[in-house]
Image 1 (tube, one colour):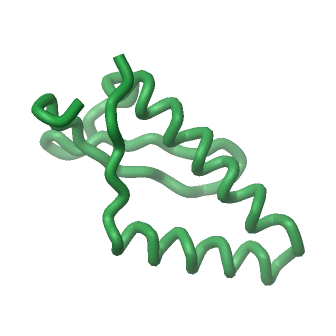
Image 2: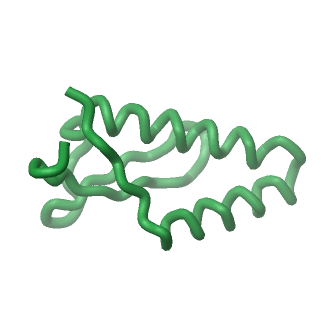
Length: 79
């Protein structure tokens, strides 16, 4: 079963800032960062229970290569 993932506006702002920071360090690195985040999001939507709970119902998935985590919770009412 695939779940729907909603990205909050505040998270989009954080992603944009991180993209800009990586892109300023090396051209193309921002794009690689976004690909890593996208890959992590795909894993979350396919298997949301794969990652452990970090605080109450909040789970955390870490991206490959970049020190960036995606924090989320599973709402069984919204599949």
